Length: 243
Image (cartoon, rainbow, N blue to C red; front, top):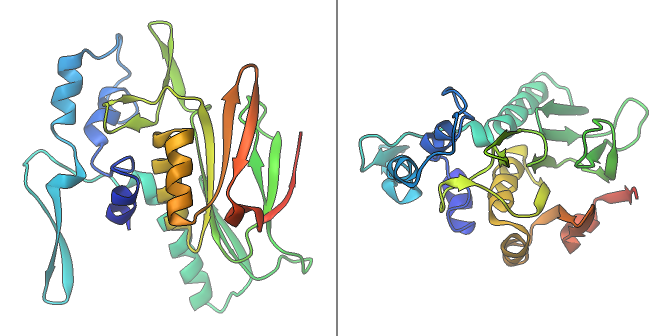
């Protein structure tokens, strides 16, 4: 799944990007005291890239083969979605047919809530107020995940450094797309797509959304405020928007 989404987002969703994430201080390594120089970025980038991974089919099993020694796969990008789907499967095995599972920014639902109403999920406004609502959706048995650049960041050399790293440049994103929400058949799919689209930025992301027919809601910084964009597929899930 991660490799397929990576290909469809032109490498923007990359599960090998760990060395760059660590370099910029969003992994186990400490936050840098100064902006990494081009040589450091190039060295970390040389240890990444989906083109270095190959899926091998052998004896009814699939294996990943890498062609550079220092390459490693970090599935934290889709970990929340995978966990939500896995918990949902466990609940269904126990005969539970009505649930809403939330793991971090990824959710998946089935059936109705205790009041017999559809499960509804709020999309947050990209502000410091945690309970500020931008939109409400009825996910109707689907998975949903949101990626944003407005919470996990730090200031360095007078610039805001986002935790979302562009695998192509080796640097944190610096465009005006601040939030991407994806609704998909599974939370895993939604979790993978939201990251790739977040990296691409508003224009390129919209192109991919239209090509792939995805249900996507974007919030874009514009001047002192925000504007929103949604695909026709997303509109079918929308209950309402807040000003």
